Amino acid sequence: MRIARFSHNESIRFGIVDEGELVVLSGDPMFAGFDTTGERVPLADVALLAPVIPRSKVVCVGRNYRDHAAEMGNDVPTAPMLFFKPNTSVIGPGDAVALPRHSEFVSYEGELAAIIGRIAKNVPASRALDHVFGYTIANDLTARDWQKSDGQWARAKGFDTSCPLGPAIETEFDVNGSAVITTRLNGEVRQQGPISDMIFSLAEIIEFASAAFTLLPGDVILTGTPAGVGQITAGDIVEVEITGLGLLRNTARPA
Ligand code: MG
Image (cartoon, rainbow, N blue to C red):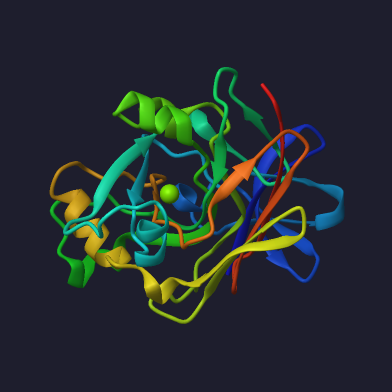
């Protein structure tokens, strides 16, 4: 099932994507179930929004693909390398990425995102995926110069608009399958790698993260990026596509 959050006639609602239309839901399906209002709206008539606004946090994993760690000159980590993005960093499909003032180099990073659906604390990897509501696409935009100068990654990874999510949540995606992440910059392929290349699986990431802090329904986990990251500048169009999840497109503009 594919679930979209959308704006239509000045109201924000959720719907199930069904052949070019949205079957409108009466509430947020993560908390209110899948009751429908009986209404159907053509997809062409709505603006898609970020399919989830993280309840408390976006948890991200750095250097989770060997070829990306290598291209940045880093060793492969021996445990998941976690950092946060604030929920104010989230934007939706088609929204503009506002390149922050005073950064000279912002990079795209196409990533698979998982949305947590049940409270997770001290969850073993064997039960971790039971806590996932669904999957979507993310772009972990990074001010690479700030990442180097600051030591900490809060500013580099957490600036407003640094976390595009969408276009929808797919509940039946196989996270241990053969899906491929492809990132295009102005139509040209820059990143292409199978999610099976992740060093730490999503289940292992949830186990590791939930041993330290509670994951809440609506929290989002970004699982790392394959090789091929690079700079975006004002006017650039970045598209991240994942097999079975659709395509997330955003354009960059000055802040
Ligand atoms: Mg990343």
